[in-house]
Length: 168
Image (cartoon, rainbow, N blue to C red; front, side, top):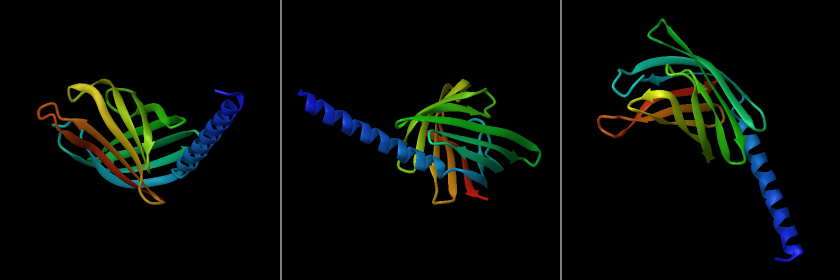
């Protein structure tokens, strides 16, 4: 490979990396604000579904996203929930706090208007420590948070949490 070819290739890679970073920055900034909404939560795939009302405050930088909120279900039960994500190129990683098992590790990437994350729970939930979290933009003013886990009895994927939020 000639010196000129290497120089041109390096320049193209730098431009592509800058464009990808700018694209993630704009995407992350679109999550900023206060949100409120409703949804459903199941502690396990065998537990009854509980309706919840939630409020979240979301902050973003060019390379990070934080969601801090509270969800209330069954009138008296309130749980603090947070997620802290950082991006490095197209990859996302972070921590989810709010599970009864303790802090969970998050790793994944963005696809279109959604950040798809593998969850690694601190302890077993539904027979293993794995699940999926999707943080999805829903129009200009909405976010949908969805957790999908595997039912150990049937092996099928089950939505164990879905919260629809609107900018408030």
